[in-house]
Length: 214
View (cartoon, rainbow, N blue to C red):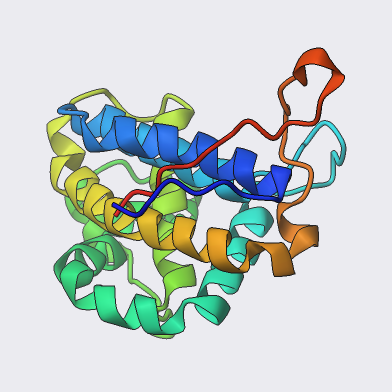
């Protein structure tokens, strides 16, 4: 745990404050589904854009831009923590039910039988194992859960949910550190966080103090 830090940049301060509050909640969750949801909200607080300002804004494009920022600014830190997540990453990348191309193929063939789905669906060999591809799969899981396409506590995805939580739970503090240390250099990416709180007594929003998670 690092010392409490007061940030000069109100936008970064707000993003980190929100992210860290949900990250702490996720850390203490016993329910794996709720833990995943809370971790994703923590992540979303860092990359999210105000959709009410730009209707053309695409969620995956926002995530992709954030991942590119992380890969550029935190390359060494990513390399250091990757071994801790190797099994979980392999689980996520090999899961055909997190591959949108497989879902498209099954939908086109109206295939519902699990054995036939696994038999006919082939993971593309040219798909990489970089951070962007990992989060593409995690985003598919997020879509399934957030949009009511997954049953709470289902036995079907327990191993996948646990792997996803290990990945995101490991990476969130790293992401927060990168935003804290390098975010001011990417104002276009991090300015104007959605739904900023009202300032009290007509004063700027400067009261947020962030206690960094490790």
